[in-house]
Length: 168
Image (cartoon, rainbow, N blue to C red; front, top):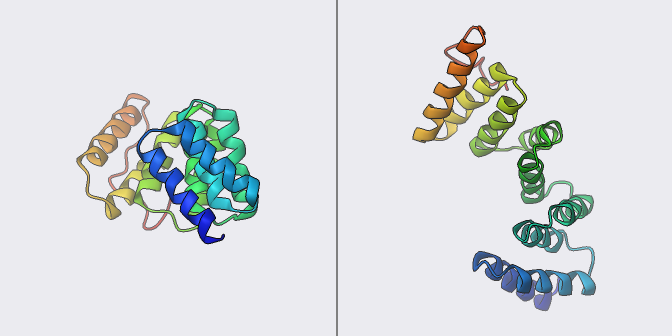
């Protein structure tokens, strides 16, 4: 990526932060027109498109970013979040599993737990939340753990107090 493309990429990202999504999209499209092989431009284009409610186009942009750089954690996370927001939970779980395999963090574990809860896989969700709690210290994690435990109790599922060591 040359310095002009890098500057335009940063300008587009600033526009996204300022919630100016149409101009941001134009900036990312200019970069892509000049060089279609820049994964960051495709990922950020996806962010702008998502914010504009163009979810199918956003997903295509994330996929293009990942085709260029399969290790792009931002694009993986964005794809997973988009799929989760569309309630495409099996696909979202596959994306979050990839994120975790590539070194995801406590936030990714928490997001995975949300998807697993949506799928009714409460024991796995609870394990993810326990592992997330080892990395993050948020009151909301305690609330999420309590909510999943309550669901498990309502369904007659035994509630473990701790996750198996290092297991998702």
